[in-house]
Length: 474
Image (cartoon, rainbow, N blue to C red; front, side):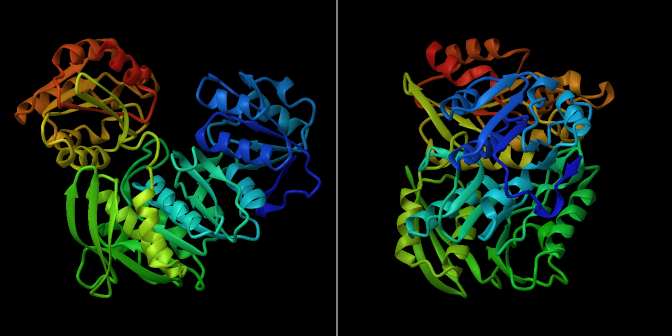
C-alpha cells in the first residue's frame, strides 16, 4: 500500500476513484479531475441532488453505497475523503490491494496548486465568503485564478475553478484530513498569503476544547514561511494571542486605531451596504456591496487588503465588490410569497447565528425577523453551547427551534436540548417555539407570517427542503 505523503503522486495516473465523493469539496475535486481529462469514478452513501446531479452532468460514474467492487478494478489513485473510516469496505480493499491513495488536500496540492501561489483563507467563521470575494476580485483583475471553496459562488455557479493564472484561492479547513492523517487539512498548504478571520471552539467531535483549537491554529501559523504574509483580524483575542513569534510577515485588519487596514464609516441603504476602508489612517476608498452585516464587511476588508498587496488596481477592486453576487446558502433569498421573504443561511455556530440575525435586521425594517434554527452539526447537537445559544437570538422577533434530527449520533448524556433553549429564550422575553419536526414549522409559519416579514432559515444541512416547501405553502 502506498500512502502518498509529501505530494508524491505518480505522473502516470489516468484513473482516479474518490471514496465519499458527494461532499462539497470532494465533489468539486472530482469535477476538477474530470475537467483535466482523468477517468473519474466515485462512491458514497446517500447519493442525492444537487451533488448527484452535478456529478452525473460531469459524466462521473457514482456508486450508491460503499462496496469492495468499486475499487477492485485497481484505479491508479484513490482519494479518501475525511468522512471515510478505516473500516470502510473500500478503504479495506484499497489497503489489501496496496493501491496508491492520498487525502483530498494532497490531491488539491498535486493537481491544482502545484506551481501556483496559494492564497489560503482560514478561521472558524467567514472562510467561504472571504475566499469567494477574493477569487472574484482576482478574476475581475484578469488574473485567471484557480479556486477551491466550500460554497457555490453565484458569479461562477461553481465552488471550483482550475484557472491558468499564478494564484489559487483555497479555503483552509481546520477539520481533520483523513483516517490515516488526523491533522487539520490546512497544514497541507504552503500559502503565499494567508488570512485568519477568527478562532473559536467548534467541531466538538474532533476538538476537546478551545485550547485544543488554539494549538491547532498555532501549529499552522508557526509553519507559515518567512517569505509569506498573514492577514489577521484584530477583533478576536484568540487570534491576537497567536500572533507572537511568527516568522512570517503579519498585517492586521479590523477596527483598532493602530491597525493598518481598518473599517471606517458604514451606511446601510438597502439593497446596498456602503463602507469606508482606511489604510494607515488615510481613506483608501469607499466601497459598495450587496453583502449584509458588519462581519461580511470585515471579510471584504481582508480580501481588499490581499488584493491591494497583489497590486490589483483600486478601481478593479471597487467594481468587483459591487458586482459580487454572493454565495449560495449564505443569506441567499430563496423566494418571496405574499410579501414574505424566505432566506437560507448556513449559520449554525452561536456566533454565526447572532451575527447573521443582527446583520439582516437593518435590511428588513418594515417587518419581523423570524429566525428558524435547526441544530444538526456535531457541535450544535451537543450541550456545549446550551447556555450560549439563548444569547444568539436577541435580534429576532419570532423564533422557531427544531428538535435536532440526528440526536442518536450523540451520547445520551451530552445531547443538546431544543426544548431547554426555547424555555431559556422565553425567560429572556422572546417569542420562541419548539417543534418536533419540519412540517410542524411549515404549518405554523404559513399561518403566522405576514407581509414584510423575513423568515431566516439557519442550518448547515438541507433542513428537509423547508425553503421550497414553505414557499409553496405560503
